[in-house]
Length: 186
Image (cartoon, rainbow, N blue to C red):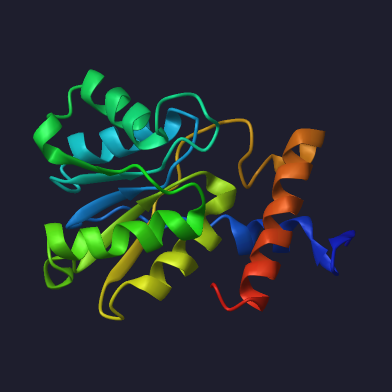
């Protein structure tokens, strides 16, 4: 077996980073910021399938486009038919950690953590391990976390190693997980 990262094989890396759970019903769909619309499309599908009546988009203007990521993602969902009143946003965060740190007190104020027994997380497939660990550090222990990655086709658990861009993204994610774990952020 070829070892490509700290003694890990492609299979081991895929099993570690690419976390996916079967979607059940939840009290909230939480979407991490990002520039790709697949996140909003996945949240919209989950909403339409009746998995939750509420969506939370988090993400500021990380790339200095003039539009916070949460607003851009909300626009995609509203355009696809999600009622605006079903959506809340947080627009100041620029990192995964900030997405959760800035949203956690707002989630408590808006819904109350006691009313968020199950939360579906939506982000990029390779980002789900870190997203889940960060979210788990900032929510009550009783909150069940369900990982539902977006449906992008270019970097998935079954193909990331086939392109240079996919390999770079996944290996960078592994490094980020390691560094954030060492700093106690995960």
